[in-house]
Image (cartoon, rainbow, N blue to C red; front, side, top):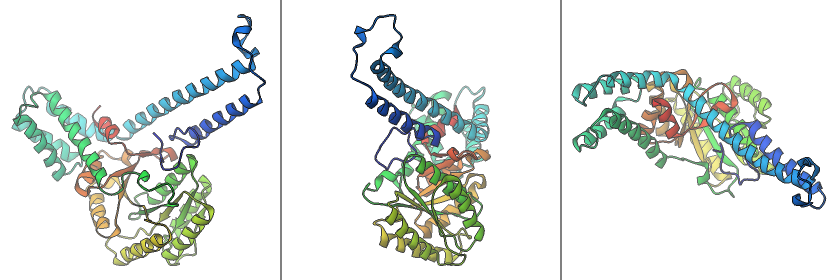
Length: 389
């Protein structure tokens, strides 16, 4: 699955790592060039059967093309499996906390009774799925039991999984669930990144820029957090590492002015995506919220519908505290989606379901490690299956 799906495909992109997508492009280009250089084809049947295939340039190029396509498909499948394995490893702590507790609840249970459901409730809450979401899940389970649709332990486990997936998918109806919702002729696509300091905002911006660029897009970063010198310094490091241009000004400059310059630069260079860093002071500071509103007005004047996404970065390790931060930002910042970082560092990754249910916002991306390609598009089925299987 491509990481970024808005740009029209110009080459086969695996979308899982920079090296993979670049190699896909190279293979196609090399093969096409090789074919163009070859003389007129010699029918394969005219060649003696004991001749090596390399004696026919045409045959070699055709086989090379077929092999390249097969290699690409095999490589994509392998990378998908690798991604799935990495995701499973990332949520291992949560899986051990949730699934093993559920298995303990179910162990030796021959029937579904009140005691079993009470223990199940404790297991779900312990995984930070949250009280309201847990009550919703169990109410759905109880309805299934009363209708005789759930009459054994396996059906009960399946019902829980199905309900968690349904909650995550339902959240996609709010906010912005996909970059493809914005017409391709509107550019640049503006992503505003918000969140308190320390949640991984700068790292998220760097990884987003790298991964989107790796799939053939022109990306620009706007360093609009002008109140914290370290923020611009950190972004500068990421910009240099990824080869993505960075627009920044001296400390204390009006963030809206930096954004204005960045919008002009992005339009002048024909950038596909502009990623905007914002100040990460505490969410209860009214001046920060006024600043965000001003920046949105500036963006909207320059590009239709901008910012097209306002992503709130939430640290999964903070659990319910992160959810409270999200509620506060939602009131004033017009958040359209969530980036859940450090999912690999907590046993309470159930917070993903709580966020989706209580905020009604899609989780767009998840951080599952320290490497650049460890920022992945959040997939509800993969997430829930990784928790239980």
